[in-house]
Length: 511
Image (tube, rainbow, N blue to C red; front, side):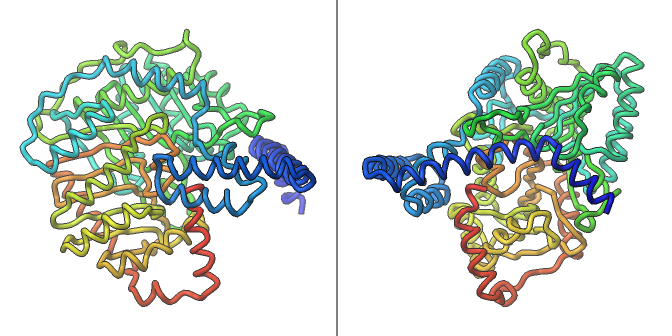
């Protein structure tokens, strides 16, 4: 009983509870006020109905995803007094003005530090995807780079600790989630040893992702060790419903001396290396680059670090442009970042391109399978055209409502010939796509609306490298531990669950 009381007191005094309480209280009071005055006044009812009509027309004519439009049309038309007001407050998905301006400035500024692409790509499929990414993300692609694939968090963490111990100049660390535990303690121990040797260490973490994981004195403690740490888009106790906390940095990046660069699904928390098991065995993947392509990851980190600190603390790109010995390789690598501050949905378009260009097979790992019509159509057409399309998702979910939406997509995919597997040992957090032994994408992109439209994400597109075969083989080995979902099983759902899935699926774009 004492532990329960202590837990409740700690939770009630936590920052996330205070933020949620203030925002929910404001929302409830505002909607109650609007509803009451709307029902008491004919003039105000006319005004609200007019706002609804205006918002409905705006949604219809908006250049946006159809599923997103449908969800908002239901809210606007279903709540005639407050639907339009709700849309105006929450629907625009705008990044906060100050953050938006700083990120756009630093994204534009960094373009001057990239080399011009002069690599000729003979394969037409590869050339089309790389050309699109280069022209619309502004990140160049490289050769003279090696990649190492990691099929588990345990292997990755041991390797990255070894590389950190050999650092000579600087270390960049950026994660969506950083949580107290064994993993963080070992990392900080290694970082403190390098700081004592004169290595500079910079850390960037997403405040929303870490709001329940870290103590209030986290930054001050790390700064006392000599680590230059800053939070991305801090969640503050603003007394305003219009303050946005929805656009999070879901990126995972480690850069060491501009020589080694990591991205993938791993966060800094013990479940990622299976020291704890909240959802069974945690399956994740990632890659470490060595060579010229690391520069893209170096620039990515500096962009967001500079956007998150005061002007006098910003980093100079050229100070970190260390020229290391690079491998002589002809494979292609394009590390890139996706941002909600522009109109280009890079991750979604790359996913569609990989599906559409597959000739033999496309293998997909994703923890969440929340798809719009275009993605479902691309997957089903590929399967109907003879391409082997396999998707692996968790069997033990971390978010039950999201998992219900994931399963709601099974039937239409299975009927077209797509094969779906659930990873039975636990939770699969890997975000990986492998195509035809020649293309692979590994990074932070989930197949859901949040990754496509709301979050800052990153990843690396790899072509014509032998490490792709290791990704393929690991994928196929994962299938041996997974349960294949049959069409009969997908249809065998009781009516209550079916109705719940249908409702959640409609509003999935707003989650």
